[in-house]
Image (cartoon, rainbow, N blue to C red; front, side, top):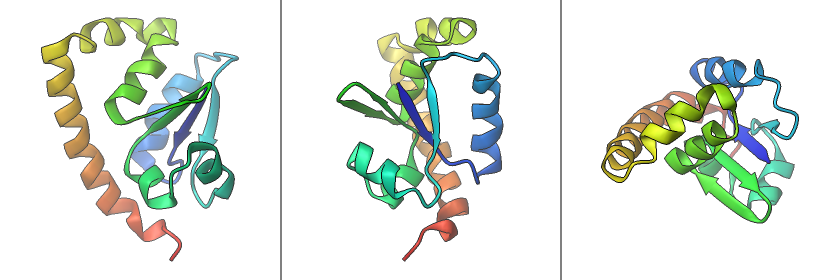
Length: 115
């Protein structure tokens, strides 16, 4: 499983660093900053990768709130978040909240996009 995240975003990096501390061997953390390989592996452009968290597991690419759920499902310490936030009504609220926060982080960090 590969998790594609923006390592140059201080908030994104801080959160991913918490997950990395759990040392899950089968999770490969991939910085999307100026990463053409990440674009090819996910079939997403740099703008799309910067806009949301992405996870590739096999041939399946998840993004946004669904990607977070997949990460949490695979980290024992965070599985409780998965179990709570996967519930349909709660997931819809979580997904909406994620999109709002991700949009503002995107605006803050879009200057790093290559033109």
